[in-house]
Image (cartoon, rainbow, N blue to C red; front, top):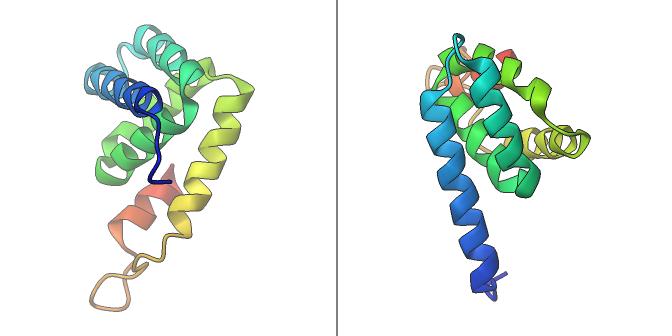
Length: 114
């Protein structure tokens, strides 16, 4: 995968940037407006968008509810890609327990809630 075409890399970067812009503005009060924008961005490059969203969800659990509400504007392919990204995240091999060995890691807890 080291021979990534510059056009593909640029398209991924644009999709990630647009996703970050929408995610920064998304809240429970403006789900309809920004959910549609998220759906438009995800329609063009769903893998890059879903990876960026799942990373945000792992870090910010307060975004779970607005993001889930915004997902009603996704296509069927968007949902399939989301499933793939979540399974990929779970299979990464990261520690699933905190250092104390008894409590679940925050990223896993956030994905489970999501």
